[in-house]
Length: 188
Image (tube, rainbow, N blue to C red; front, side):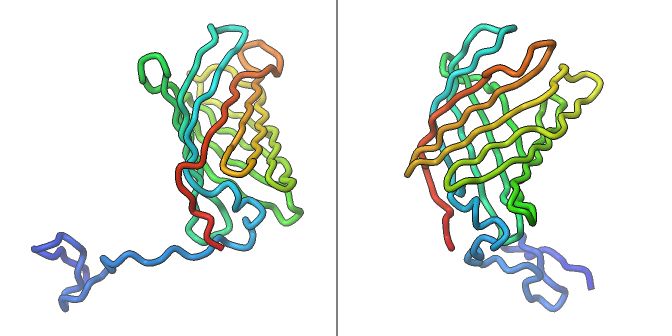
């Protein structure tokens, strides 16, 4: 039978009146063993960074990164930045972190600029280094050839660096930030 909605709560119910979806919050499962080597990244990180590129003026930004899990063999990733000067949104990206069977780290990221980035790299302790294996763009997206990412966690600090080869420029530094852990999701 198809579920209906509760008149009082709007929650889905079965025709027999029982809840089709529990309204109770279930405790999150521990991270999947396949991503245990990345568990140090879990949580929400907030801080400031600086950007530069040969084709634009230098800029400062506020950044928030959230890395979470649902107990499956991947970590969910969401990133947003805003201008420090006036608070306007600058960039956002979303994707997934995975670990391959050989211990390599994989990153899949979608950008609102019309790009999809696939990256691969290593994790050593609390440092992740990635290089794009593919950056594909829509017909209206700017030409981005490659991206490298370096993330290092030291206690409650996450330092990140992103280098980019785009619009005819070689691989050069583009973004660097230092973020503080604002919340944690490091259950084991």
